[in-house]
Length: 164
Image (cartoon, rainbow, N blue to C red):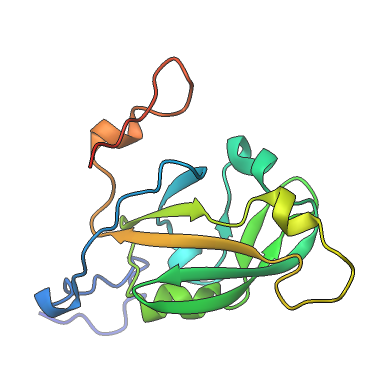
């Protein structure tokens, strides 16, 4: 039953799950690179479309603004990395990444840093294109992270071990 004249609902639009044809194989982490996980919240999949990087991961990233390349499903997106100030974040074309990959509230992403901050902040001054880029391989997990992952890995006393 439709009620006319009432205020619009503030609930986020719930979209149907992606078809099975949109699923892809999860690639194991290399084990050599640092990574962080993020469960998608409203600000990441709706306006203002930005992803705040966890504080514990900041030490791996440069303190500068730089392009960031996100590699996912044999595609790449160049987004804006804002590494200055208190909060480091991905923004700008993050919106395109979120939309192209059908990210929804509750989905999770694993961000594996492929170009560490030492490589990203050093250069030979020749102005090469990849100088200063931050590169992440991203994996999307539909419906969030299992408790086995979210409850571990924050400290070396309780490591997250991924066995292939």
